[in-house]
Image 1 (cartoon, rainbow, N blue to C red):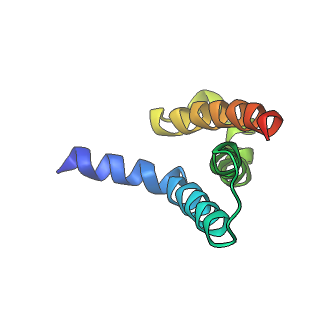
Image 2 (cartoon, rainbow, N blue to C red):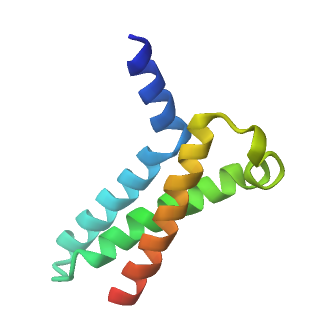
Length: 94
């Protein structure tokens, strides 16, 4: 049960649920107004939302106390950095 709690806490702390909901809302909007677009738009929204929420939430923590972060926050930092790079690449595919 402990591993499930750690995974769920990571999911909540990384704001992945917000990025997933933004992705779904984008896909539903594109479908409902009948826009035939590439997958790049929804992917950009997912990765940009993931990066932006974590940047706003943890900017001070990352900037001031990076040496003292636990493994969970370091993983969030790494995933946010990867999300920024992916959002940047999807931006140019749109």
